[in-house]
Length: 626
Ligand code: ACM
Ligand code: ZN
Image 1: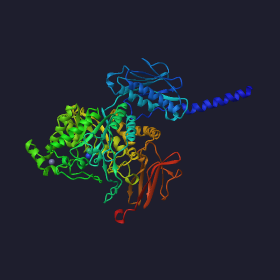
Image 2: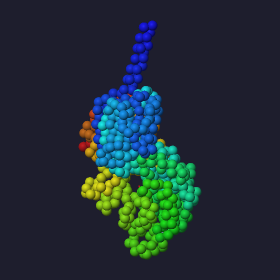
Image 3: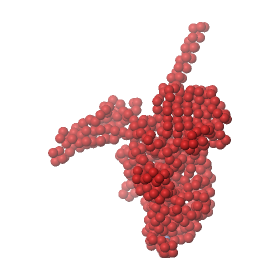
Image 4: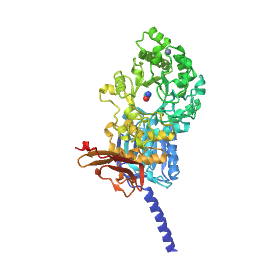
């Protein structure tokens, strides 16, 4: 009996030890937060979430209650622990507290403090937005390796004081060229929230599709939202998938998405393009063009000559009607009016446009575009809205209160800041996530360019040319996903991640705390978070780049292998075979006899990740050797 009892005890102990071994993870000095907080101190030890932990909240905002309940639901889903959620005026013992409270004013409404000691975890902020970001940090702190239906979770002991660097932390998705489902938009908003991004620039109208339900202009939905097919490659004949493509978001769906975003402290900035990128509208309402049409929606990508007629009053009546519907759907204070890539060819030949130029003593078609945008700005002001536009809106004179999105490099941003207008930086070279993120032969088709994770991370949004006073006009930074060659939600995720993590860190973290080596170390944990969230992120940062330095005299090449990931285990071959776990481990540059081929890949455990990089180096021609 006694013997059996001790066996039972031993078994129980073994179970407890096993649970402990899995739940009480070793302390990692770096909790791998992405984006990195403004100030972070890590202490030894951890707070254990057990069945007696309570979640307390303080604040009248129903969203504070929702955050507490959301956290309880998350902990239940991951560990099975059913924690009590309760209102409280202050943090109590053995409690995770989320509350509006005293924090330094300097943290602003998006800042927060998070403190974890052995007795309690406390998140405080001045406003619900700050609490939301504090809870996003908390989700990252809860140890991943213990989120396996086990009755304990842990949080490393930390002191965090955090706030964003920029007020505009944006991500744009082109739903004009490709219509993505409501469910996917919501997922995308979840992913944005996870990265503490707060502005979803929703590109809703294009030459290739109109995506907003209009009660006033029903042909926008009948005609402008559907096209006959879709170009899918860069071949000379630009091949078409002949399946009709289209759809639009109903007004109810838009309201639902706006609400969903607001619950994640994300403002939606809808983009209604003008005067260019409007062929879809002209296909339905050709009278708004200079020539009168008729028009068909294009199935191939490219800039269209036919744009709204600026000399036609009907154009402005139409836009005022549409914008009235749009502002009723989107409560955010800013409307994006496009303004980019509007060829002036038709305006030059159009009697109505020319008459407007004459009547208003405008110098040229650029001033006519400026007239157009100013008129729309004025109308939107009557609706208590301001405008933002692509940097072309600088041409011909900026509308008095317009903000500028600098995309053709940084010059537009510099100029707008000097004119004391708010600026969002989104230059193609650093912020266009439709560019390749790795060697094109290993990547799915992209629009072109080359924008690696490291290059995104290297970007500094505030141009050095600006004075201290001018710098204040740089309101933030944004990454853009254009859909010409991104046709599925999976591919959106592939192109967005992990680059959006780098962009989020530029947007949130003080520049002085930027550190590439440390970022890629933290990203190893972030990739696990992506796995857990089911995000189809790219492994291009784990593909091997081969640098070749020819040595003509010895007929060899020095091969240097690199990745954009932390301490990669690179294995390679030079015999033409695919690398395996037993292939040579790369430790330093090595000589390759020419001609020769190197195949290299990163291993994690016993498995290769990413794609095998292949480089064949030919012997230099005889003449080149001497
Ligand atoms: C743009 O890329 N046309 C703004
Ligand atoms: Zn015209």
